[in-house]
Length: 154
Image 1 (tube, rainbow, N blue to C red):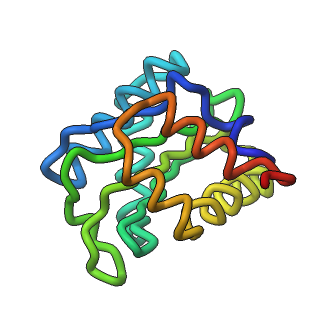
Image 2 (image 1 turned 90 degrees about the horizontal axis):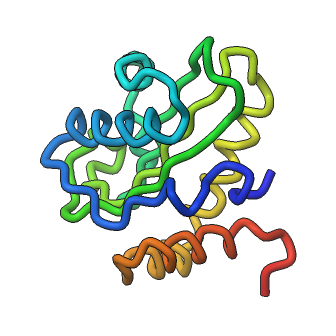
């Protein structure tokens, strides 16, 4: 599943202003609600519930919060580059500045895991992460993400 199936150009936030994990999750939930028509509160609540199980800060300044919603029709993502890094309670204790949010239907199962895996692979690539951190242009960020997810990318 390429990231182009998950993220649209409108789902990229080039300079998210948030001073805490909770605020970042709220801003991302609001953006996801705008894009999907799902209630922002339900998205936020699902993200907070997942974070209670353990931080989705995966290390290296990257977080991948995710949630499942009964009303969600298809898996989708929102990518944000934070204006300033925040504490995300990551295992490596590094502050987070790149967030890939994933929302999926409750019944997504393996597709949800596949989408998370695809995003994680892209965000583990040091050159992709460096490129994402070096720009604040939404279209450039989208291009970097989508190039990263193309199986035959050069």
